[in-house]
Length: 101
Image (tube, rainbow, N blue to C red; front, top):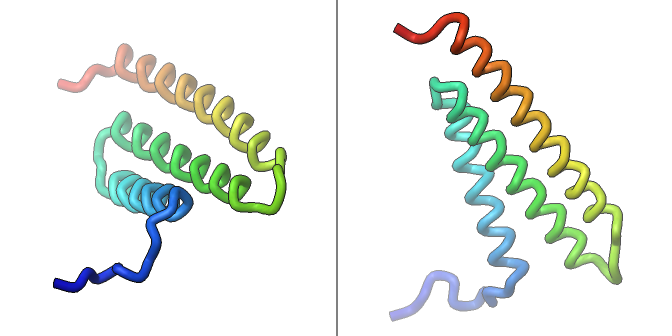
């Protein structure tokens, strides 16, 4: 039995790229199909995590050590957490003013 991808070496970079691609695909599907705001917010967080993974992968495969992508990831994590907190606070305020049914 021959394998479909027998000539491709599964390195850590390839594995990280595949996982990041899968996370991006799942997050985009969930962002566009989910009706609930919390599910969309979670999908956006997963999407940002996939982008962070890709940035770290780019920094890892670059020649030498490049601190700029790592700084971008740290900044992005802070922005992502604070944005999530603000959206959850706004959602909670909306829920208290007008609860569903």
